[in-house]
Each structure stands twice: as structure tokens, then as C-alpha cells.
Length: 157
Image: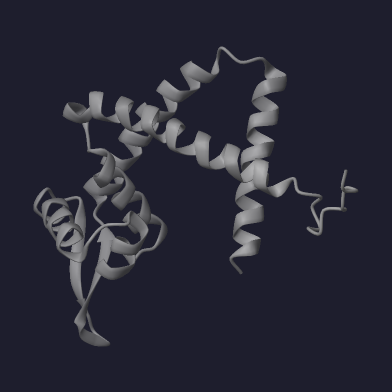
């Protein structure tokens, strides 16, 4: 029998199982959230629109390329999505004065209101589902997700 060797990774080999849990869990969570958002589409915005509006709100003056990167979508698909948002009065598209080839995107007042409404409906629905958890579970979930985000952001610079 071969003697066991110490794990050469600084985390003692714990990162891989944690990564597997993240990869297995996060898509399932988002599938449930997207499903709920699709059910409420008649009342507001679609999931891709919601994600686009959130990104534009967090990054006022962003461009199509940055939005496409964020959404993981092609430029033509994002261009069509933004055209719909502009047509619906949710996003303002302007030429960048510094570069006439670049388009800047910002939320309109109506877009900000509609995003806030969609976010509130989603938060209410999600809080209702999380209400089945104990206070201790809720605290652990919140801490774990905040720590995960902090670790990933620190690792990406």
C-alpha cells in the first residue's frame, strides 16, 4: 500500500468540493428564480431584460460590448435586446462624445421604476420561499454567499 501524500494545495483539498457545490447549486437556484420571473413577465420585464437593466444601473454609461460580456450573449442579440429596451422607454442610448463609434447606455426614469418593481416582486417571492428556513440557516446562507462573492472578487483582482 502506497503511503498517503499530503495534499499539495494550501487549502488541504477543500476548494474542489466547494467549487463543485457552487457549480451544481448556483445554476439550479438561478433556474428557479428565472422560472418565477417568467411567470411574472406580463407584469414587468423578462429575465434577460432584468439582468440587462441591473447591469446598466450598476454601470451607467456602459456600452453594448460590456453588456454582451456580462450577459454572455452575442453582440447582435444584445443589440436587439437594447433596441427593445430603448423602444419600451427603459434605456437611453446615446453616442459617446469621446468616441462616435461607442454607444453609452443609461436607465431612463421609467426603466429605473420598472427595474425596482421587478426586483421587489422577485425579492418578495424569494423571501417567501426562504421563510421556511430557520433564522440560523438564513444567517448561514447570507454569510456564505457574501463570503463567496468576496473570495471570487478578490481572486479576480
